[in-house]
Length: 115
Image (cartoon, rainbow, N blue to C red; front, side):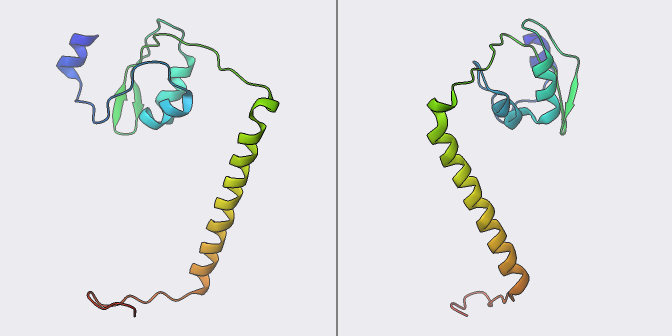
């Protein structure tokens, strides 16, 4: 595995972190298809080559731990805060879309300010 990677693999632009990672973080690094394949692997298993974007991946599941779901009472404040943040983002996005539809955009020549 390490010798094959050294001989055939392109250098990684972003090094994949070592240690346990949640599925959302794996998706950030690899994309959706490799993440789905990774989540189906048992510890110790190696995947077939998986196309992800412009690359192919061969994944090895080192270890897996089931996710922990805390009681709502322990995370309720964080959940409410996140829901409010998302609602605010949605409202802002809608407002900006409305402004773009109704507004006229005028570009000033380079070097001209305020105009």
